[in-house]
Every structure is written in structure tokens, then in C-alpha cells.
Image (cartoon, rainbow, N blue to C red):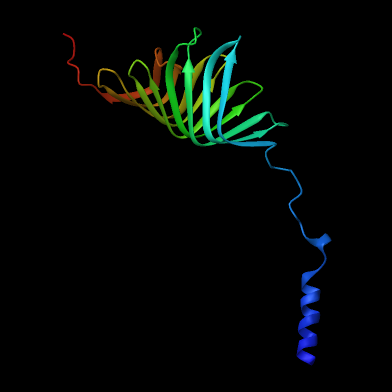
Length: 176
């Protein structure tokens, strides 16, 4: 009987009151909105610049920030709203104040003209309509050239691009 009484007292003391339990009511650090299989249409002067799709989206209103995960895909368009390229990545972050996007993890950009670029991170400045990175890149061209380098700048269509510190191999013969 004495052991039953001690066990009961111990259990009552160990439980405490509900006021002592954190039920997670604080919103700090949590998204204001969250959705799955989301699509965001980004425009400039009313013209469609990009369609961003992701399996998961978290939106933070105070920071004006969107975090995308789970198979991010971004379709880019020229000023006439003609599709130019597709960006794929594991994750992306969008600053809603500036429409500045950073793609992270296994980034691939495939242009409609046949150029493909691979890197780890890539920034897109929607205002300047430029994509760039300071990371290692690999580019395959429509002529089956493979170029490597560090640092990259281009328009989103991959029509006017440069590798800042290039090295590579080509299948073409040198011109005499």
C-alpha cells in the first residue's frame, strides 16, 4: 500500500499542470501561408516573366519572402511572353520586394535553343533579367561542346552568356 501511495504521488508531481506545457502556440519562425503543388506567376509591366512551380511553398509575410522545396521548376519567358528556358532545382527562395530568386541544389537550366547549364546555386534578378552564379558550372551547347568553369552570367534564355573562368573541350576542328 505504501509503494502504491508513493507511486501515485510521484506521478502527480511529474505530470505538472497544463499551464507548464508548451503547446506550440507561438507563430515565430513559422510561415504565414503554406501550400502544396503551388504555382506563382511573376510579371514585369504586366507581361509574364516566369511561372514558378513547386511541390511545397512557405510564405513569410513580414519578411516578404517565399521558400520553395520539392521539385522546383521555373519556366522563363521573353518580353513577348514566348517560352525561352526551363530551370529545375531542389529548392528556391524568392524575395517578394525585389523579385530576386535564388535556386539551390542540383540546378539545371535548359534553353529552348538546346543549351543546358548545370550548377549548385543560381541567382535570377528579375528586374535586370539576368541569371548568374559564382559557383562551378558545366554547359553543354547545341554543337555538343562541353564547357566548364567558375562563375556564370547570362540572360534567362541562355542566348548571351559567359563563363567567368572557363575551361573545356570541343568536338569541333580548329579553323585554319
